[in-house]
Length: 363
Image (cartoon, rainbow, N blue to C red; front, side):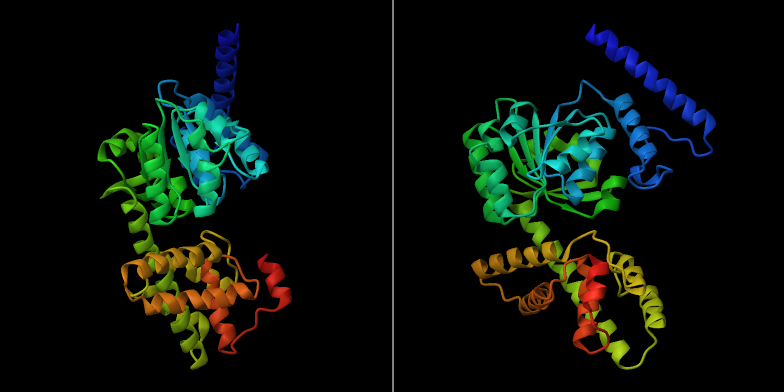
């Protein structure tokens, strides 16, 4: 009876899907990128159509996935996996965030332990070492629920020490684990064009690659456990320093009398500005900084970088200075997209003030 109900329900949803495409000037398919769905963000119709697409694509032959961390990146990765046919169980320490993904067909676990016990592949995208400690090693952590068929994929940007500790703890339970932090933001998740840096056993990467391929255009095997995390810290060093350099250059040009809009237009045409930096120029023009990568997360990553540099006796004076500027900005209650550091540098130069009124608009 349950099977008949499922088949009937799926056929009925398929009719709705076919009817929509027959009557719409913007037809969609199951391969349509999430960003291309022709509805307003968070609209009811978008949620209904996306749910139908997910149900139609669900593939029982694919391994079940448990996904921990429904933050800015994690929730979009979960939806991407759902849309490509994976059965998903999700967990977030803030239950309401998990409930948002439940609307699209995911199950919500009460604890990471329940999640791990009910799936084959445990994936995590959490904020920092402390969050990883809680969801993996806590009394109801995922490691208390793993079993013989489990694999762990940690997508989080954490310290190399944290990655190695998780790898060793999983190994003691005969569970393969890779650290697989990603480079990119929400648009790249939705496009499936992230880059993944993998540390751990190469054979584990090969087993996980079909899942990682949904999210990324390339997965790079970097070596033993924690080498994926290490590569992510290298990449984010350049990301953060590049933004600080751009902030200083723009502030100098403005203070010297260059027209701001012309300054930004010309910078956007040069080869010295990276693609990632060019995407932030519109933020500067509009003085609006929607979060793709929060300043607090960039600040956290700089801390990870500098801690590792200290351990290895590597001098990183520019990185230390950039982190201190972010520390000063955060002390003033500023935490939007990390490109907000440009606004902060302008304020320090006396070009503009981040007033309480403006900060409330940023929030």
